[in-house]
Amino acid sequence: MPRLSKRVWLDLWIVLLLVVTVQARSTQAAELVMFEAPLCEWCAAWDDDVGVVYAKTPEARTAPLRRVQLHAEWPEDLRNIPPVIYTPTFVLIDQGKEIGRIAGYPGEDHFWGLLGVLLQRLEHSPGT
Image 1 (cartoon, rainbow, N blue to C red):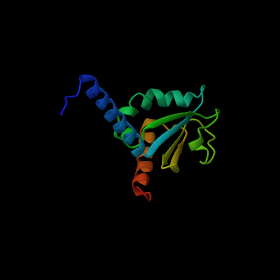
Image 2 (spheres, rainbow, N blue to C red; image 1 turned 135 degrees about the vertical axis):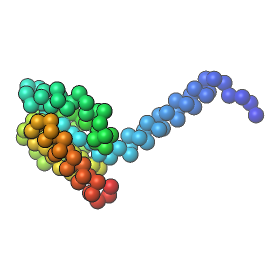
Image 3 (cartoon, rainbow, N blue to C red; image 1 turned 30 degrees about the vertical axis):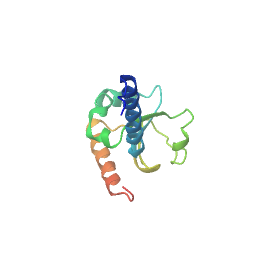
Image 4 (cartoon, helix red, strand yellow; image 1 turned 45 degrees about the horizontal axis):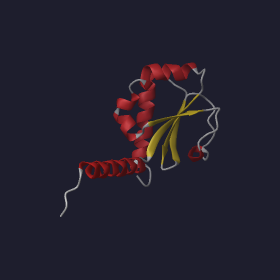
């Protein structure tokens, strides 16, 4: 049996890495969508209080943050959720369906508590 060159091994590793990455993205069903606006003071407060650490939290592993500009055209996969009026509004989505939302930013302590309630709903929603 012929030996594989370093280049072939490298190509195989790259393909394997791509397959694993695609699978990880496809199994990530839930996300926390933050609707924001450029001059939103409460969005900036959330960024200062929570945004700097969110990606490092267990909540982010369950529901990674996705930012969407409220007044821009929404991505196709978000067009079926009810309208958002206030910024920031955080919508927990699982498999394309809204699980719940937090309208506005009530401060860091309240945000984490309300997000915890939404994530509990996620754990109890059908199909999860």
